[in-house]
Amino acid sequence: MTNNATPIEAPESDACYLAMKTHDARFDGSFFTAVTSTGIYCRPVCRVKLPRRENCRFFRHAAQAEAEGFRPCLRCRPELAPRAASWSTEDASRILALQAARLIDEPDAWTDEAVGAAQIAARLGVSDRHLRRIFEAQFGVSPLQYLQTRRLLAAKQLIADTRLPMTQVALASGFASVRRFNAAFLAHYGLNPSALRRAGGAGAPGREGQAIEVRLGYRPPYDTDAMLGFFARRALRGVEVVAADDTAGRAQPAFASLARTLRVQHGTQVHTGWLQLRFDTEREQMLLSVGDSLAPVLPVVISRVRAMLDLDAEPMTINAALHAAFAQGDGVRVPGTLDGFELAVRAVLGQQVTVAAARTLGSRLVDAFGEPVATPVAGLDRLFPTPAALAAASGDALGQLGIVRQRQAALQALARESAAGRLPLHAGADVPATIAVLQALPGIGAWTAQYIAMRALRWPDAFPAGDVALQKALGVNTARAAEEASQAWRPWRSYAVLRAWHAPSPTAAAVAAAASSNPTARLAA
Image (cartoon, rainbow, N blue to C red; front, side):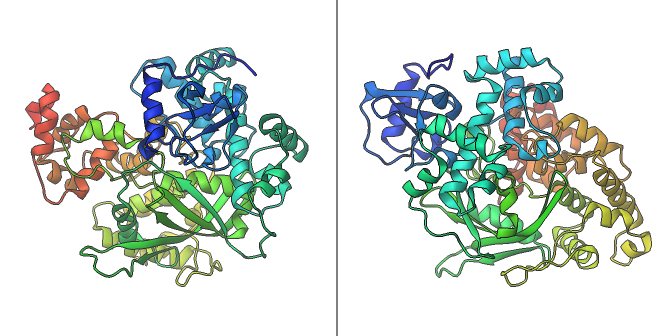
């Protein structure tokens, strides 16, 4: 099969071959190697025998390799690779194409309608024809070919890692019918889904109530203790449990796993359950266990977990922009969330109070308005309140929890907008529009809106300049000074914020380093 997919050219392809030769995990997901002698394409971390250089073709995206007729490797499993970054400061056409890909990659953006080129174009405010033209120029494939690869790789992961019936796999992966799923699988991979499961050594179906386990890849370095510690300090009673690592000899506290409850509304269906995650740092993977009640929306759960743990970050690009200002923190990621509404509520509760105080208020809110849920994890027994529940809550009921009137008004405004579907809070939402809507609500200012954008919308350039701890870490005294100093770190200011928060002591070095490349910041410093 031949189309306009463009492979990576030499000499860059020579660098790809070297990365593949050394199994360098930093490049995982940044390119894929197609081997002409086998018809297979692999990740750079694949441990198969190194193919001859003349037999290798390199592609930036899995969809390009599949469009050229190559099949995914059953050993390294390209569906486990971190996704490519979708944020850029380059030309507008490239940004538009990357935003289109970001929408395709985000299941929560398409809960009420089928995704297609026309729908994506309408969301981005361009014509269908223009979108196809710039998308093919950027990726070498059409938006529908890109989407088809995403669906097939999602299905491939469910087939390999779970024992879900094929009908459920097809529907969960976005196929309208099992017949279309089987036809697409056979056309792309040369075998039917059942044969792929047998080739992967599938056993008997699991028992009802048994957890589903999948693996998710990420690029090193990754500071797992910093990430799990962040969630541990904010864990709400009944909703989250972060377990300590019992390994002896650790000078600093360490964490072994994070478990929590989850509600997923996909279309008109609501699914509730639990999940647990653990890091396998030796293999640069995260192990995700999910209760079988969430099986029908497993791709959505996987996407949210990837966002929550920032598994798709590209450390080399980010570190190149920030390392001069922040010598430490190259493995620090930006914590996300599994539920944008929950994160927004927690951001409001955290206004002008300590992390511990916000955690206490959040736990009281869960006790009062959260629904009970059964899980096999001790201490994990409640769901976070729904928008409808908080919208219907009285001021007196909220006041009895210690929530002041200004916060009450903000919470209920958030709840009403979310319940009505007017405030999407996920990675596929329009960032400037959502920030504007948030700041129009009572009791929500720039700090809260930027914090929500950073964690719920996954905007890498969010910057809550009014944060006192951030200003202290940067050695400045005003939001304006922090904002001016931050310009040199764009578009990765969210990562700069986390590094500043994790800095061992306040330092003006970060501002000084920024000033060296940003004349405006010199005045602020």
